Image (cartoon, one colour):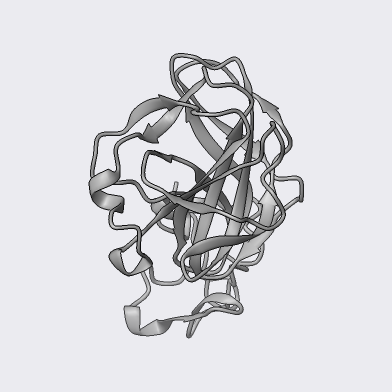
Length: 226
């Protein structure tokens, strides 16, 4: 059954679809159709509205940048090592979770976090998860941030992961040397790491070093636009 969302004033059905010339969009209030009673869709509140009805599917999950190699599962190299992978946020959006994918071993704990950047390097931690037990093998896992939601502006960010053992496997690009070298931000996306010495949450302020050994796949889950 087709439900007319834009009836004419007085309740009579409107002609549908509306001519493109009659449709305008105001970012602050949503869609408006001239000549009919307005049915405004508030983009600050998507409650009850399927995300895909108003935004491209790619905007629901935005992953970190990968190298030009097949994605394979790579175990952690050192307990307490933070791996920072770049992520591009294309427009203002609100996120509520971070995610990763487990391989054939998934019995340990991990943290996920998101950082802002300066000169294409991670700097300040914007959001972090609690230490979380791996959900199991060969599956995705999304973890809520410790805050209800986090609004991000368009820009260059970093997803981060820390593990409590060297046996768990996570989806990663484990050979990104050709794409990452030379270690210079003028050469394109660069990956970083930082050793904490123990299984701790990613730090409030990053002090990373270049690395080209691996890039773990992390993604943000978009709650709404904005």
